[in-house]
Length: 604
Image (cartoon, rainbow, N blue to C red):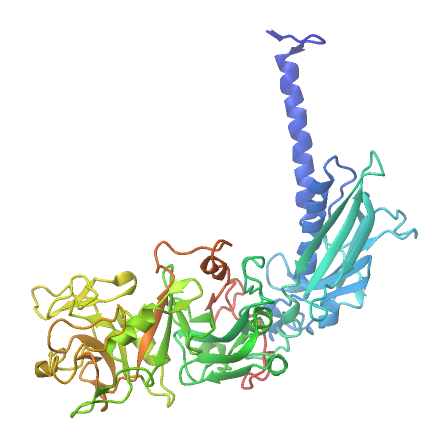
């Protein structure tokens, strides 16, 4: 069978051979680039200059971003060959000149038992015998132990100057400048020329984040307690879209970093760059009782990003085998960035795919007062006022509500992490009720308790009739709920001065959940009538406010249409799962830094 054209006929066999040859060429080109990802890449010519630019940039980015990486095995005191000095920050990535840049980092050996250090240099040809072509970018890989002295080596990765591309008109390596020069970033600007027409060229600019630079000089010292530290947020970006949410013009008032799961007082500590905190005007304190790092002070989003990147975890337990570990994650670290005109003590928690944020709002100034056993006095918030304020509060793109406590773990988390000014568990309103009230809360009837707001609005969590009880988590005090004090309704308190949309009960009795600040029997929860009381342990002078990533629904996503969409572009949540006892150096979440003085506040 023949396929015909006007010029020449090709047999099917000839076509198949042509396709096969083209495939071999494609495979060869791919293999050449794949080899480049391991060693170096040679690209002599291409009709797609932009494609070549991407390939070259990816090659340079890979080597520069690794600069400063010190393999955790450097802390292994049992092998003197691994016990080497760290990498000085000036050697990790060095701009030798505008046309020459080098990086120094560790690579593990093939079997993973040792670490080898290499220095990689890129340089534009300068007309010398080693670099003859001034339009060619060259690369060299050398063995070293200290990033300065070169070691003769037969290692397969080592090679002298090799050409990367000969399509270069100019190349420039530089650090970008914001308020000051930023050493953690490098700009790469390349002007490519066309081989077919030297008058045709293409400018190519990209920026490389030197993610390992802050980690230099910290994974070695061959100390028995090491590795004992982890850089938690070195890659943290506070905005996912700086056009929509500009971190240079947005102000952040506070942040909290909490060891949210398995915190062990006496073993765990969070550290930070104390000099940077001072320079930025931030007040920083680690609360050992709760495992919370408190950060306060107005600063730009960009400066909060810079500071958050310095935060480290450190284990105070010198004996690695004695560190407290768990079946799942040994520790979970959660970041919550503060929001203007919102409580400073906001903390985060993650459950499955949902992120939750909590804070305690104390308010004794604009409520209608509480029962003092004689009359309504003071200015404490009624439950309906607390609900109204919670639901009128926003946290970036999320809407607030009185907290819904749906598990033992959540209950313990709130009680453990949220404290009053004296460090005590709070006596506070939260979001349970058994009264439908003036705002028609679904399914709430006497003895049938539901959540009044948030994603669980209308869900029944308790019924005084055992036959109807759904078996959900509760933490009632002994003898509660007891629906006390029915004779006070519309006598000692009434609905004469309600705020717009404020909830008020449609029946007498105690219909609203609060945490008491002292446990009774097996639980912390109490039911109270809507004004609350002024005496302990039931004096309710605030409420627990909650936000969830699944409320409102559908969730508002990053965009530029509304302010809520712009706020959704802020990365106000971050999390890290820590592994404390991985001595195989294989888990990416393992401790991998060495802090020789773990008891101070300064990050290593």
